[in-house]
Length: 232
Image (cartoon, rainbow, N blue to C red; front, side):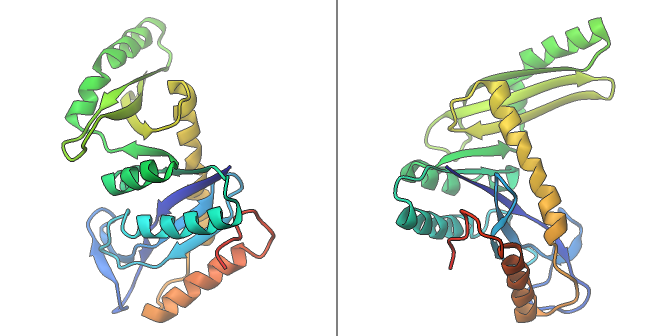
């Protein structure tokens, strides 16, 4: 099995670098690189420098197609799986993965319909927290379809009640694990944040120079032999 963790990160810019744009979420001028890590050991598989106003999921299907082709050429029977946060929650990724038999686990951005799905479980968690004064975390699942989807898909959710308040999280997945096990599998992608901190490029480079530096950093992380060193 090959597990690929997709992530996007902010690379702040200071000046008039080519491709530098203001990003509303990060509230800064920046590049918005796409990074893919081996989800088992944290080694960087590939990186793509993108303009600062690019959506997190932009070019992800194109990159995934390239990786899938390379993996299956080398190991035709390999099972490929991807894991990503809500920035990659777009139908183009779901559709491609389903067509190619790729397992995916991707967070969903919370909306009112999802909140309603988890309402009963959250009430149960809140009652238990009030009774025990302890943090309570419960897990459930259900079918869900956003307006742009052609059909329903399985969503696993976490309902949490604690001293600091309530918390709901939603994950879309084709894995067959029980809800709690599946959510814990998704949560392990948080390790990618530490890998990103180790990888982040230096600042103040322009256009092509920044891309060259990004690729050199990627090569440096891949010097050790790895089952994911397939993008020659």
